Image (cartoon, rainbow, N blue to C red; front, side):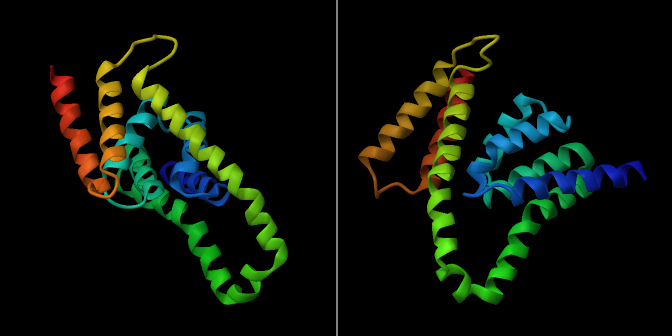
Length: 187
């Protein structure tokens, strides 16, 4: 019974995260970080490790991180419940919107709400990017340690993606980052 309650709580946690976050997986990072730590599912270090893993694996970011967090806590059933929780709000909203799509999307109030949400979504994504960048390059601010390897990888990939804008696919950049990480962190 305790496991079922834990699984339902995990489902509800990811359901809330998905329901109240606009802008996709990246804008979920602050809320995922807060909820995972507050509920004792993951430590802050684990959250950032799972962000890296979720980024490196195929599929939607939010689904990947929910699956990893669920599996870490309750195994296969945890992965199933957390993934269902993060997917369910979008599924229900899309189902609802599909039924009334033309009238809904063209409604002036909906257009104004979407216009207001755009800057907030950009802010969430930038805050998450800054937070993850600081954590991966500098590390824990209380136990300050500088990772020159992360900085080299970050700038190398940034320069490559700027110089060869259309020539490298994101997959090649991700693989290049992984190879550079293996080499630099083994030195």
